[in-house]
Structures are given as structure tokens and as C-alpha cells.
Image (cartoon, rainbow, N blue to C red; front, side, top):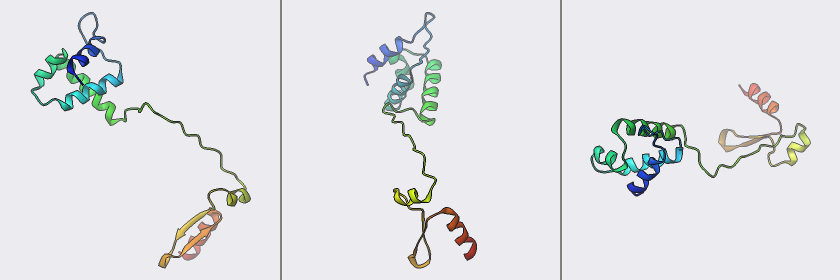
Length: 125
């Protein structure tokens, strides 16, 4: 991103006293990305976007914290889980048919209910 554009975006968050208080998470991430791409001395970056060293340290710290905590993605999709059927007949007709385990020599054992698996494991232990 061009640093002049970034400077103008930052200036919209500048208060009357000249202090920058960024409340937009997207802008924080843009600043962090620009900072990581910067190859010159740090003072040059601060001057290019018009923020003091102390102010920039706070901004970059908040942006790094945001990244660590998992910055929310704009194309979020909510997934709803439907209730599972409680009776056995509907369980066998659904996409899942109980529990499967691979036993010795690659033998596949299927159990219709978890209780049957637990009983089996108790007997072989």
C-alpha cells in the first residue's frame, strides 16, 4: 500500500490534540502489513505516515495482538448443527452408522452404539 494513502487514513483518527486513536481493526492490520514490508530505518516509516515512535509502538502492538488472537475474517459463515436423532433406527439410516475401529491385522469392527464399543473394550482389556 502507498504510505501516502495510509497516512491519510490514519489522519482521520487523529484527535484535536494531535494524538492518533485508531479504532478500526482493518486499519491496524494495514499498518502492521506496511510495517512488515518496510525495509528502511524505523524513523523513516514513522515520518512517512506522520505518527510518533511512541504512538506507532502502541499501534503495532495492538495490531500484533489482534493477529495472535485471530483477526476476524470478513467472509464469516455461521454453521448450524442439527440435533442428532435419539433412536437407533434413524441412526442407522443417517450418514453415520455408529462407531468403527480398526483392530489388529487391519480388521474393521463396527458398533451400532457407543455402549456396545465400551462393553467390547472392557471384555478385551
